[in-house]
Image 1 (cartoon, rainbow, N blue to C red):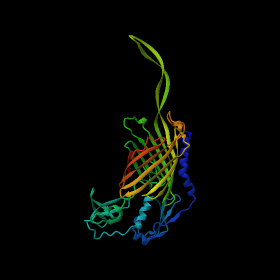
Image 2 (image 1 turned 90 degrees about the vertical axis):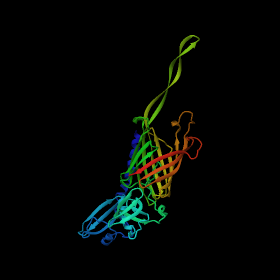
Image 3 (image 1 turned 135 degrees about the horizontal axis):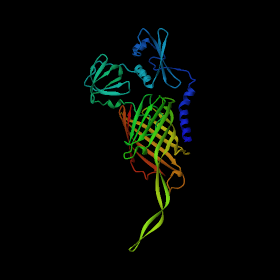
Image 4 (image 1 turned 60 degrees about the horizontal axis):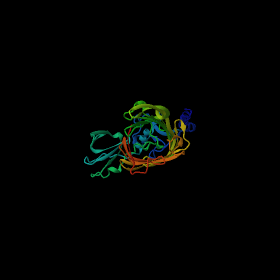
Length: 420
């Protein structure tokens, strides 16, 4: 138990130390776009339709800053000399940046017979035919939702497709789940307030939520049919992540799980058995081995660090951690290598691979008394929409603790993920 407390304290330090070191840094002026520079004046505000909540006769100018913790700060300066500050989430900052950088949308002369891709500020997209253009909104006929109305101030970009629709696959929606592979995480974090629900094999349920832009917390449990609740497993999963550059992210965290275990106890017992000598029955006593089992629960998990290189669509991740089993920290580290590569508008290639070593004291009888090393190899396709993804993959356990010779394609893996 003392080792678990040490691990938990280490995670807390991992999260707060970067903030302590950055606390002494000052605010940094942030240029949100080359279109406006460091200061957004009244003319630029009107041109890019920004800060509509303030009247023209009180607004003077605005600036964006970056806090020591990498969060963004918006400062509005008024003509009377006062100012107002607002801390922005990554999503809010992105919306301002997109509003400034977006192209001028010309709704004149749109052919209602042609399909359009309508990109919105929340990173979603809608495809359909624009039936009517009004002063503040447009009406779109979609394939599955019928006729819908979209406010113009929610539209980031409008792309009119050719009549045969061949342009459609060129416009990809952002990868909705770049913070994880199948089960292992990348170092990339979700924006504050974003989370996802995951279901593996319909047997393991979990959820993760971004408390800040740098810290997520998750947890889950098993729901194996036919097993009582006190025999199910559960786990918790905090992770911190930081972007060092646009392409390099680092992070770390802890996976703690409490799972059921069954311990075999052998005892020597006297057993009375009948022996027949012809028509005569005579009891005799023999000494034999009896097997009994004790059900209890154990703690397992891993303390890990990860680094990711790449962007939202294509990246690779290298991770290393120290596992613990029954409150015993294993001395040989566990390694993980994973990656994802965008294949098309709705698919990506994902792989997650592990190298781990099991100490001989945890092996069953008959195994050679030395540590045994194994490798888990996995590969598959991720299918996704704007909020949901499905992973169809295969994995194989090889090495000394493997399940035998590699059999193509491997053991099937299935999970569903819904972003919220």
